[in-house]
Image (cartoon, rainbow, N blue to C red; front, side, top):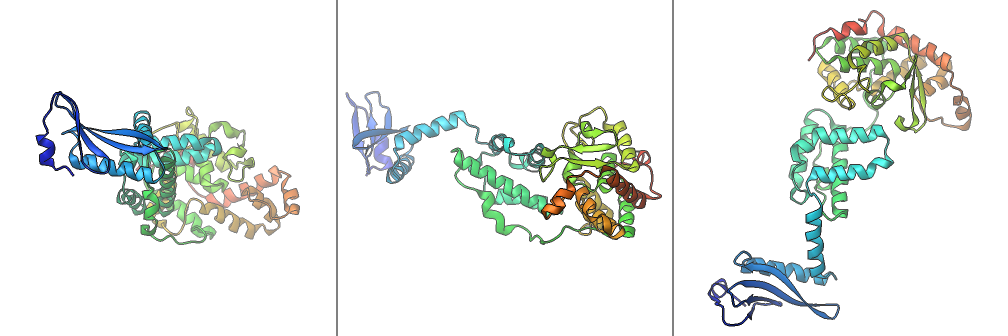
Length: 400
């Protein structure tokens, strides 16, 4: 075996010659004095050569590591010459930064997702991940780096969001492995280090008096008017929060909000007859966002939906963390209106876009019952917001 001293002292002669190290590795010295590390091996019954670079740029220890890597590939049934070419081609043609791989993953998933879900995923990554580790090549990202990102999200009391972001990162790392730019999934490793999440129903205030007080408390704190009015509209319509956040003006047809199937969780179109108070909320919103495509846009980008956490953070700041979440307005509407109108249970379920439990209910739900639903929505709005400020007054209140 060679030593560093021997390699340094090798001098050129009138012709090229080789000096062996071990395991097929040798140093070829040319008449000009250049020294090239090479390795002889056999693959598929044929003798082949690998080049590892010139000395001293590639040291003796570097050359031995390259030899050992090549031998490992041979043991795994791969031709090291071919895999080296593939890696060089991959490095030349692919961007390995996390954000670039993540955007490629998003593009691959988009045809199978609804626009709402795609926007949710893209927004969470753009806001919570790319600014922190998006510029780091995937092979260099470690589990502690990913855990730091997720714990920052947890600190904002967004445990569900933290878990969704971890799952999305894990999918990106798996995509990187499949496309040859990554070798591991550090987002999977950290699962056991996350804060525990309580299972069960999401927090919701279902007493009418307490719910009214909560809305009044939230609307009294400084906040962006788009967020305030989005919460009021969400409370009035009892739809899923994502359907409000990504709501375009084009879905408003007179006093009916027509949500297409691709934006609904159950992939069925849904019509929401709008109460007088809901229409007043939209009228106020039109003065703020009517020139853009979305009713409740992001505070920084008018063409993107508002943050999925904006309403929840506002509720938390008003002192209701752990007691009520944006999705809780659905439970509140269901509990309060079913108690007031028990004979209208099927129509109330229809208003919540629930999946019918049996064929009889399914047949019943084929009918829209728009006018009856409009009456129920109006009763809900009247008891919920009796004595509250108008939406235009809310616009003029202090902002955060």
